[in-house]
Length: 117
Image (tube, rainbow, N blue to C red; front, top):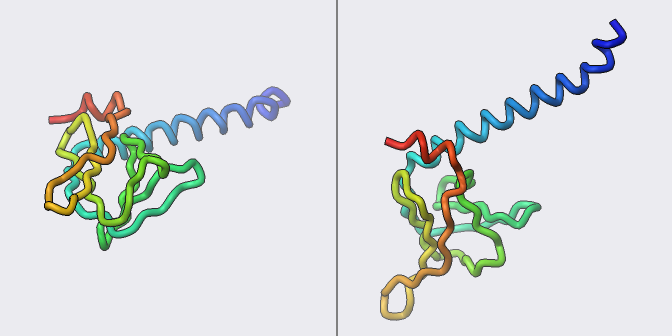
């Protein structure tokens, strides 16, 4: 009985670690199968300086791509990602209406790339 009391915190921690890993993989696969093409209407920054995007109605939190708040992204820029894309682009229109690439982010997820159609 004493051994169970000693290892219980480790078992609980292992369960939490496994659950959070599976949760991240599932969200990454779901995100990888979606395509994004919208104008950013609002930006928020997480405590780790990652950006959260808004497309007017919905909050878009990225699981597979990392865009930091020091990369020059502004409200009014365009977030573009194709279905099962390796890259996510953030572009800005210049005065002549042409798109200029502000930043490009690689897909960081190993599992999401395996599950693409």
